[in-house]
Image (cartoon, rainbow, N blue to C red; front, top):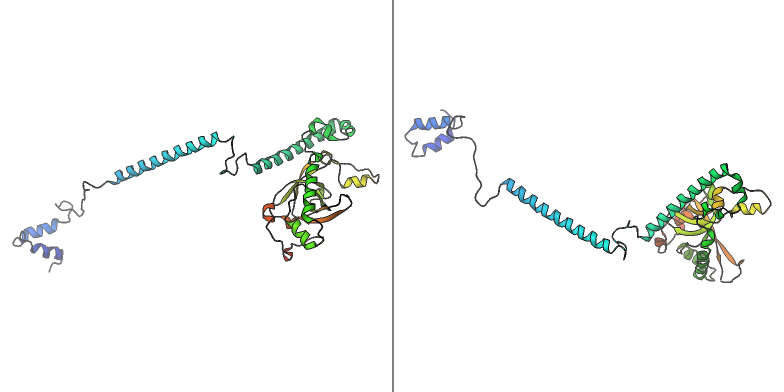
Length: 307
């Protein structure tokens, strides 16, 4: 028995058209899936009147995106125009790198001053070779026009006086060490006169200056001219040569890590000899001053200290 197309043959025999004509039925089955036959092995479907083709859908989505993009651009233009009109009135609060921000302005001020000091030092080294007598006869380099824009220690003495009053009122007459250390750990050090007693950088040891800015990892201080640990040796009538950077003074960036500082706090009395000396461990102060105000320092969390 021929099993080829058995199911289709059985179904077609039920049709009245092929019920008695087996020859036409066999011819139909033979040509059904042939290349030249009238019937093909695929189905063609056409879209209805209410449907959309793929190309029409893509065009519709593209137009929608283009419309949204043009709307976004118009909003951005309107915002930029309004912010440009109010730029003189108030800084842009949404942009943290806005030039009118005080913090970024002060950072730029520090960078420009440090760069200017390096430039002045290089020029003075050239003058030392071409006109050595000029630097020898000039007692204070601040008198030179070249060093006129370098920050001067004398301009920040009043800030230090304000800090002395602030810290004296903060500590008061208390003699409890725990109370004093808790207050000092959360106080503001801008305006304090700090002296570096220990540091990994040898050039920083003995440096003393007024703090004008504090970050998480650094102190920015203004140091006096020719007034450091060499001054005490000079009082013993021993000749000491100050470097050009020491004669210029100005701004210094001191890292807190692996550095210890010393500062004095005057008591309520007006006598200058009535002061308290404290030592500040820089490794313990690597916290922002804003966060340090609410931070509780624990004695068991002390990093190893090299004495």
